[in-house]
Length: 110
Image 1: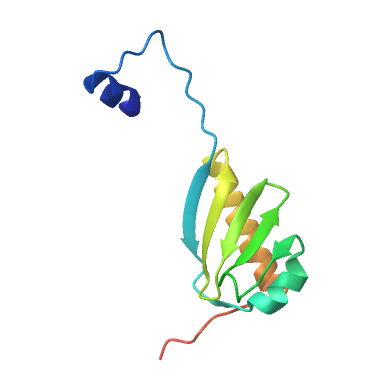
Image 2: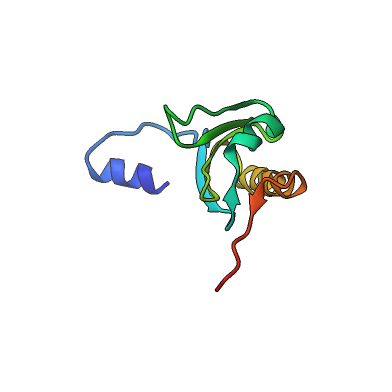
């Protein structure tokens, strides 16, 4: 509704009540650990990892249907979600899988 108010304020005529629909949520997260992307590419399945082209692993998750860009630093970007809950579910599911498969390492605080 804020976008619609701004458009009207700018002089754009909007007829009727526009239908608003969320198509794509993009979120970032930090798993606070180091990730072995090479091993993750084989373990996760539905991945694309070409470090010469792009430093992150591209992981296409089926349920929920999102794409996650995963970096060795433990940071990630989740895109394609239609609901906020999908983002939380995808990140939680990925984190659990990484831990179960021993693909994430936590550094000790010195």
